[in-house]
Length: 469
View (cartoon, rainbow, N blue to C red):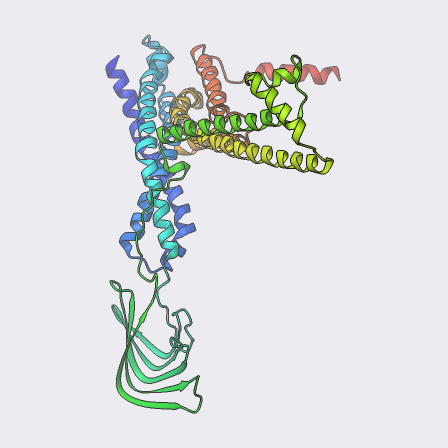
């Protein structure tokens, strides 16, 4: 039996790694087409570009592994069924449950691995990805000079050259025009026959060395003063902020940058705040009841003040009735103030409750998506046996419908849960429950050697309907 189980698991290894490679490549290519142009325009090093895509591989793996499990299961069992090996196993006294069992055990192990991965690796990678993306967005693009085009992206400087020859880290230019507006009290124009431009990555400065030119400078406060200076060689440096990528650090983490334990601790803290604000709201109501409701010894008004010291309440009413004359305008004003205070407290409570829903959705997601490995084995094994095909086209076609159903359920459930229309548990686990129930149904039918759809019975049913008409 263990030899047979090793053989079945071995049949799944190559399709699994092939599937996870293809799925990861599809996700990665989508990311490349979406982000590469923006990243390349920032003048990043090849190492930083590789780091950006490597950090994004964490969420790709978290999504690709369950998908690969379904495709690999359909392909492996489809090949075993197509080559009549399933029939041979059953003839040897091995049931369908025993055939599926080793793959089911491996899927449980993958489930625990992904739970660990989602709580220990994925949050840190998501956090580092966000920081790096923010740093890249802040970084200025590299200088992209074009002959005969005025370059305006340097702070306080405009630059134009007629000819340019790019070298390794230096640009050699001819017929240079520079407008220097760094000094608000003067206007400076620089012409040069040739020069070279070098950008220092370590300092963030651009160094321009100009040859055979002249400087025209006009004092804007004293317009009669005009200077013209000829030079054989002139060196100037321009500071360009954010031209060099500065790596930032932040302790703040979003929902997808936290582990389940961190988010659960935040949920518990929010619940304490909700209780605190509800008590504050109740206190506001009680104080208002004491101030405006008549004081009976019994009845509804007295019950609303339950818990208060009776002697204190009586003395308070007596004092208020003797020294206070309330006008209608004052009462209306205080009522409006009460309404504003209650609405403010209610708004705070709603914000905490909405945050708890979002956090709980992310907590449930860290467990529901790994559990899909188990669900996809239940659905993929009988589908593969019934399909009797082990190629990627058939497996991919069969799997696509279940992927679509599963991810639509997850995305739609998350949206509904964020709007507090359904519970976070139902939002994240409904897809597993529905697809898992379908998998159990298919496994039972495979054990009974029943077809998924009885086409003969279906044809007879519709034939009877049309005959009646």
